Amino acid sequence: MSEACPVCRSALDPREGRGRPAAYCSHTCRRTAEFTIRRLARRIDAGELELREVERGFDRWGRAYHDEDDRRARVRALRSWVKKDTQKLRELLGQPTKNTSKTAAI
Image 1 (cartoon, rainbow, N blue to C red):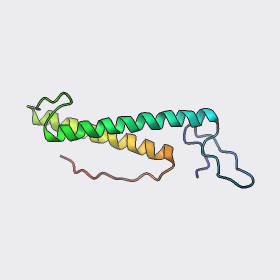
Image 2 (cartoon, rainbow, N blue to C red):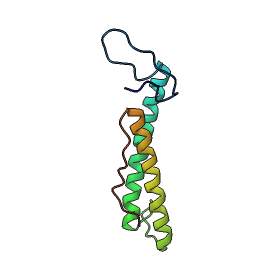
Image 3 (cartoon, rainbow, N blue to C red):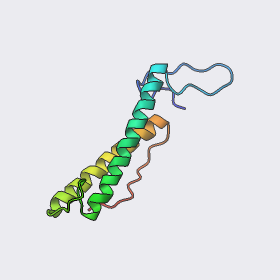
Image 4 (cartoon, one colour):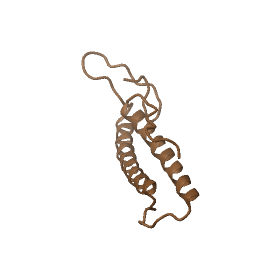
């Protein structure tokens, strides 16, 4: 694990003896991370759903886009938001951040 708390960045106390090393510095940081992980997961799901709809040519209310430039701008914004939230989620979960941009720029 890391030597710093992923929430507050304070140093973690080294664990003596057996057992899993601490991931967070306090119960408060652990609970904050749990809340943030759930929030980010919901935001990523919602962003990916909207991204699929916008790529098909519809806005979040099911109406067709009439301006292709607006649609492209929304796709770029959604991809950016999903990528940033995914990186933050990986950081909180202790996973290495990857550049997983599987979709090409429009």
